Length: 181
Image (cartoon, rainbow, N blue to C red; front, side, top):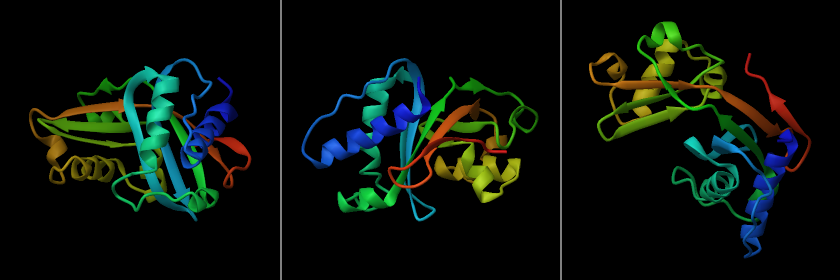
């Protein structure tokens, strides 16, 4: 798939929504996918599907979902011209037994699960926040609604995944592949 195309298609989905139209993206393949919106360097929304899905459906669901990310006010039509779009395509998650040996900052995203609790952090998060591996694991626990350090408890499932990331350099502008290291 063309790197620029998936980001442009996400913007097309959101623009069509604000015009009262449905837009079916022209992408193919399967992948986990997250759509992230950033405004003036700050997170404005991030929604996605960690498990592999048909990309046209996953992209559409994530792009429409990010407009209403419950952590932020609903995105407005005018605000769309102020946000950049980033797409993360996820590899299938693999369970890890020894997180301190198997997870690498700048390479892996993580999912922490325990019972009905689940938290996911994309690989770009610890890089941006300058976290070490233990901080990364602790914040994933907090995102899951667990306490810091809970990742060490018996019965906790920890998964890692990798991402290919494409983003706009400016709202609606040039699209580049984002490298984390």
